[in-house]
Length: 345
Image (tube, rainbow, N blue to C red):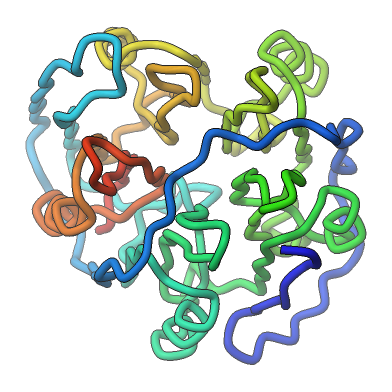
């Protein structure tokens, strides 16, 4: 991929965002001339499926269901981990797509080209909420999307094949909600991203960084009084680096938050037992798992790993949820996913 690929906005969207009102997004210098990331093998001709969910709010007695099947020792695990907490009533919206519980049609696709995604977005009047690279040589993508209507209606944009320097001018008056770092055929670091306007009720103090280690992530969180909303580790020439998005952890956005990398499913589960829920879960390129956890606010939620795309769709139907985070990886030669899901009604 020698040059940036075209922009695919939501069908016909011409929204022009006003200048950002919150804290200015920052980034560290791009790390160049390193070897390629350990990335997924080429994935072709995989069936993609879509699924939409919408239901009315159900009033339920508090129930705790825990199903934890241990991961394969030393690996990323081939079983599933699931926890679903239910609360009594209330489907109040929160402050972003990760935490909102207002019912909305939602879809999940994998193995899709940019052209196919664009067609699906137009067909369903939808916008992307998460994007992941499947095969960078085509490229193909895994995406989650929601209908761009009602409480979720927003101007938005998505890009892929861009360097950090090329992305920076595109972020004027906008903020990132999803990021996936990857390396192209020439070993250049590229990004696939989703962004929304950063004004009006969507205005947030926010920052994004890449090419940084865990100590730097912690320092920046403290400096900015922020919490993570996206955490993507990548193998940068044998060194673990992170691409992250954070928002100011104040006012209506405040949640107690923790993040971990290179930890086991059991370790994540032990933290969940203290009253937290995952909003991101992904295999670490150096083994085990990376996650972002926030305080549980009463909403229903679930998380899974090591499941096929169709199995993930089944969980969305069974749990009445939609995806707020998805990661794709290869396990025993098959494409599988880890996901965090939230109540969708």
